[in-house]
Each structure stands twice: as C-alpha cells, then as structure tokens.
Length: 68
Image (cartoon, rainbow, N blue to C red):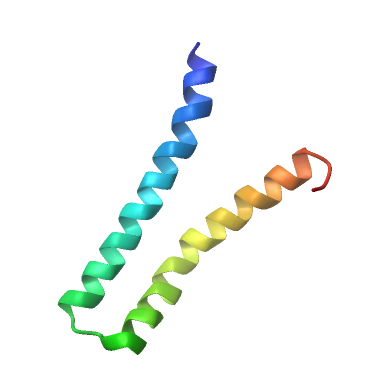
C-alpha cells in the first residue's frame, strides 16, 4: 500500500512543485517589469535546473526500460 501511494504521489508532487516554481519565475518577471526578453532569460536561466531534473527522469526511464 505504501509503495503504491509513493509511486503515485511522488510524480504528482514533483510536477506540482515544478509548476509552482514556474509561477514564481513568472511572478518575479512580472514584478520586476523584465519585459519579454528578460522574462525569457529568467525562464531559461532559472528553469535550467528544472529542465535538468526532467531530462534525468526521462533518461532514467529509458535506461530502465531498455530503450524507447
């Protein structure tokens, strides 16, 4: 039961955290009046860590399942 719960809740919570961090970046860009270029740069620079995590999850999934 606990393993099933963890298997379902972990991706949901991590996905929620990533969405919340995207909202924080957007709010930061809006409050600082960054403009279009500044907003794009904020998402690229601050979102790089989130993108790295997503890439790690995808690579791990592909390696565990023997390819695509």
